[in-house]
Length: 104
Image (cartoon, rainbow, N blue to C red):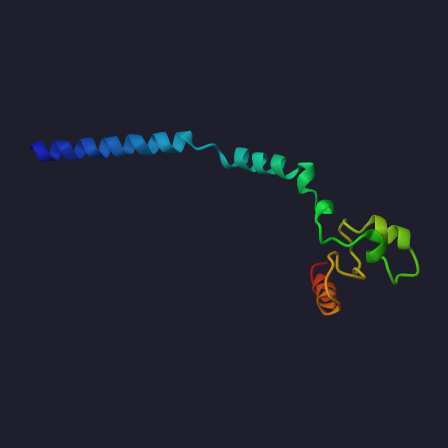
């Protein structure tokens, strides 16, 4: 009989530990809010990426509406982009433009 009582105690203790663990974990929405707040810091801005093309280089080769293209460089566009956003060699740049076609 002693062994049965010990097993019940162990189950009860493990149940209490599980409840405590569940209560001590913050909800996922709070974790997501913390990650979003951290991602909004200026050091994580996409414009700070070192391999990003300059707006002038991005609009190079376009004859009409260069200013509009430069302003919308880091914004979602429904149209096909003329060049990749990052500095790549010519072959990879063409591939990046072709791949971007499938995402809009």
